[in-house]
Amino acid sequence: MRFSEQFVDEVRSRNDIVSVISGVVALKKKGSRYFGVCPFHNEKTPSFSVSDDNQLYYCFGCGAGGNVVTFVMQYENFTFQEAVTYLAERAGMELPADAGTAADRREEDKKNQLLALYREAAAFYYRQLRSPAGKAAHDYFAKRGLSEETMKKCGLGYAPRSGSPLYTWLKQKGYSDELLNESKLLKIDSRGAWDRFFNRAMFPIMDVRRRVIAFGGRVMGEGEPKYLNSPESDIFDKSRNLYGLYLAKSSRRKYFLLCEGYMDVISLHQAGFDCAVASLGTSFTSGHASLLKRYNREVVITYDSDAAGVRAALRAIPILKEAGIPVRILDMTPYKDPDEFINALGADEYEKRVEKAVNAFFFECDVAWKAVDKGDPEQVSAFQKDVAEKIAAFEDAITRDNYIEAASYRYSIRRQALAERVNYIGGRMLPQREPQEQPLPAAKRSEKADNAAETYVLNWLAGTGLPYETIEPYVKPEYFSEGLYRDIANELLRSKREHERVEPSRLIDAYGTDEEMRSRLSRLFMNQYDVQEKTVVINLKRLILEHINKCLSENPPVEETVRLGQLKTRIAKGMLWLPPNA
Image (tube, rainbow, N blue to C red):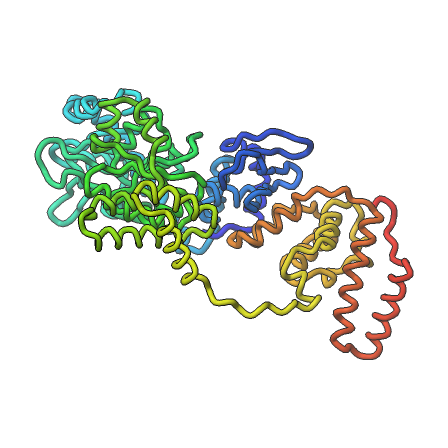
């Protein structure tokens, strides 16, 4: 779905950025700005700034920046269209009937119908659990230690044993057989209709916006498979959703607990660990890692302690590392999973295990060490060489030295021998020296790094109350570097010319998918300057002179050379003037 520029402007104007961000980040006003701890990277000192005036945010620590739409995109892992839709709904706005192509609208309409259908199905299963027919499933949840409050919070339900009651219920709600078939909750053919789930305790699966997008069901009594999950559909992608994330994303804990199953997540949430999530009937993927990366927290893996759980953890570790997520692994022995552990020892003991969770390096080494025949020198040597390879991969010398010290003690390796092996591998891994980069020409340097003069003048241009007619003789777009700065100058001058209010947040949308450009633009307008006429003139002179020199270097016609030379002389003599109140 595509939205018009006017509609996106209206969405932004009706969603104050301070109000939206303060819903997930604790903000404190300092001067004209609001500050808080950045939700996009781990920090202790608040460097995340929000401007009510510019309707922008910027983190001076990690560089994340943008407007209210891009904040929702970053925080919720939404596309641009999803973020605009979310904010429109938040403001009580109806989506425009003409948004996007006819195909786009049909696809969006079908998704909305499926979401409504799944919401009705979840309500149906929820009521069934509390009916006489759902007693067995209700007893099952109770025996697993779940309270009524937890069952309600997680929307747990029951799919009846016989007939096609869900089909009958949804038909009464007016849904067509075609849509019911596409929902994949039912199977409909010439012989009739069958509910996909029957005689199962039901777990609704919700996305980060708390919309039901699928179900998981555990069979009551005998039957296979024990757990049955919804197949993927237009609204459900297993590799891009995590069970419980809609709750865990709001946790104040600095880590996620990564589990294997629904009951583990629910038990942990009931015990106070509101940061638990699980993958959905599939192995942990890079898509899951990308989803968690958005929240910039450590991941503590709490998979089953059996051999299968260890193998799953070993597969997940490199995926998390590749995404740049710190990872530790929790040891639950002698218990199999979090649900069993907490029911046996309680939440306090589990908290202690979380604190003692081992980092990925030692977990991988410990697993390998257990498999080594300690009486076989070849196996021991191979293990020690593998440890050295892992340590050599650390880029920081102090970190390598600390791991050499710890590993030599933990695995009874001579420290000097391990250090020598690490240094040997490190030398072998060093890249070949690249030819030294030649200095860039002066005209290119401003493209390589932010230009302070351009930044200062653009800040002045965005904030000055002077009309276009007064500014135009002195400020030209061509005075600015090609790309971002020239685009901004063009937009600011256009706004002045057309007597529009200058809105830096509007410029962000042009770079909605380019995080680097969005960050630079946000930083440019979030820097606070004591703008003075004298300094504006000095910086503007610098820009004009650089522009003149660039033009002269391109050997223009004689008449243009003369004109540029005269302008250069006038500026050198201090004949550039700006009116009062610049």
